Length: 468
Image 1 (cartoon, rainbow, N blue to C red):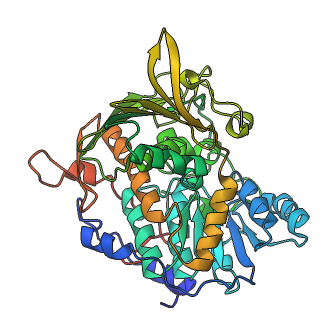
Image 2 (image 1 turned 60 degrees about the vertical axis):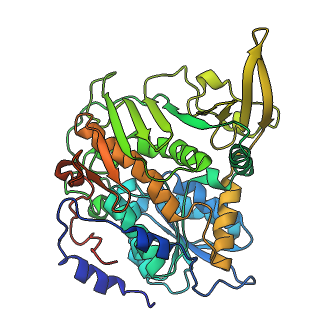
Image 3 (image 1 turned 45 degrees about the vertical axis):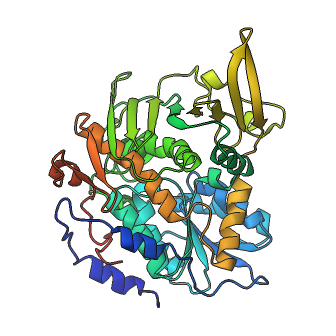
């Protein structure tokens, strides 16, 4: 299907309005099944380089750009960031790798209008992920988008719909699905060697202090703040918004969705679960006073038919250690699991497994003997960033769905979003309708209060329409 013209799309979407009643169905099971077919668009020739545009280069994008440029089958033709003060240094870093400087632009539509661009790599703040992905699909581009998939459940489903409608490869940056050691861990679990599994614990425990209030101020030179704000509600420039957007509801959903989504996605995949029956989450911003809105202490409980998954978060625990590159990549070193900040614990009826993310490997333990641990099996693993990029590029050429296809990414992000909705409603237990991805009351009726948080108000012209 032909891509929609950028300007035509903006003109249409600015007039579209929301038009969705609270609790309306997001997707049907039948449409999900139909969408599972692999994209069928014409693949990039094996002899051609994949031409990329990197969208968002302040943080993660500053690493993704040079990494893709190092690949002999890729060329970074654009870097795009709303902050032009970053353009020079980021372009230089890519030029040093590939021998040619990319074009630099502030407006993503400049990249999408270039028919020579095959794919975009989206590393913007979270509130731009869905819109950039939808626009990319409509423009005929494949998309690598950083986690989390979306800012709200509704727009996450629209990302899936856009990928399927326009036959696009859309890969989420949840690298663990491309890690050989995690693939082997899943095979180990699926073989039944842990026994029956009814409990999984997922941890995200680190240090990230609150921010003190600062006055609104002038927009920094070179920053297109209106475009940076994009679909989010309009507000005067504030440095806390610009630098701490992860912890404001208008932009993101705290560290469960910033970092925890990696572990939640990995755990959900390893034990083969999709939608929970119910979600319950409590917590608070307990440790430091400040302006951040999302919790620094959070527990979420996901109830599946025969399994409970428990997520625990803290942001004031420096003795919990987030794995560094040495622990992630050394072939002779495992984390000290009790104080590993991002571990997964899988409890079977016969044995239990520790799993690390982004490397760190896995280990399986049986009942101790003579008060000493009994290690049954283990495998080291390394940070699977190269494997994930390889999977994306191979999917572009083959048109086969990638390991972290947007459907998988959306469903894992959805678990984080359900937990945040429960938290924001004072710990309300949410009953999930997997056919519609909406929430129900105990009587089986639409939960209007919860469903009102499934979708945000969009700010024209940065609007995702009902039909993508």
